[in-house]
Length: 457
Image (cartoon, rainbow, N blue to C red; front, side, top):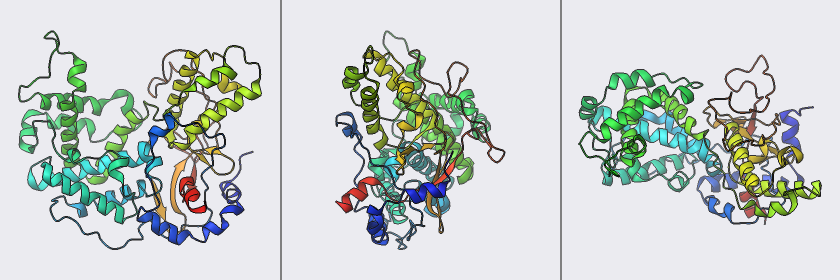
């Protein structure tokens, strides 16, 4: 029987944190200032020993005593950035929530960084309307990156987003793309075709049809080689992959996205960018796997002791649960990737089925019941409400078995007919969209375990 959300929340408030909850206003303020937060060091997960008993996140029943925008003072800016922040204030507010101080490292891959990247594109799109330029110079880009961080930080965002999302001043320049002027851009590229392909992106079919993405790639190649400079050719042959993957093409792709942002309202542009980025997000597994070699001793060849094997498997998987929230499609990719790694070291039996490992075991665990939280594969945002506090949608109910890979192919979010997708529960009448098959809950998370340990220890 599925528990109600309220019962989950109540059970997730152990006595050990009651005193801690009295300190919430002070701690939230300190979090806002970024004084209690250290950036997540992903490299540690590939070398450190997995913790056999990972501590879960703890949802909190009561609303957050302070809003995420406790610092009401507008920050002191450089005065040297010409970007119009007020024109995209709603997008900036959404970005501050998506990259909230404590959650940013854990939501970076799926929510925070894609939203921050979209914000930068929209800011430059707005900038081009008045200046005719789709890029900043390096000096002004440095000032603008600093100002963007200050504004978002004043609204409750993580104060180290440049590190969390690998944002550099070059993200605001044209870098190696030879075109940065709107007039030059429109003289080279069939702008009407790109706008027609990308004005309304189908959030379900775009990842497969790639209608908008193909138009952007084609235009990026035209811009990249518009000055007649081609990349180094091996044996005088320039492959399609060389043209497509060149850093210059990628730099010109950013210029094109900024131009698209200038032709759409900020909200529409934000939705389009997030939908496109999600196509790439759902193709990969963002988790870092440590060496699974020790599992061979307990799970390799003929498994002699099922209990010992499963204990070792769950101990190994536990280190994945400390890295980041992932989408359901990413969980499929991660399950396939780990399964292939295990098969290469002679673990051929389906240990997922044997040990009852589900897709949720690959994501951050929530609550004392240790239920994994899988984010939707469609774009989503963090929200804030004065009553409920900070919240985001994830699946806590369905326990979908992790599929054991039968070939070297990883799951595709596109061609489901070639992939043995796990069975999904039937949708209820109140649920709509691609992920209506999965019951969703509104998960209120206010503190992360590393912060609690640091305070209570």
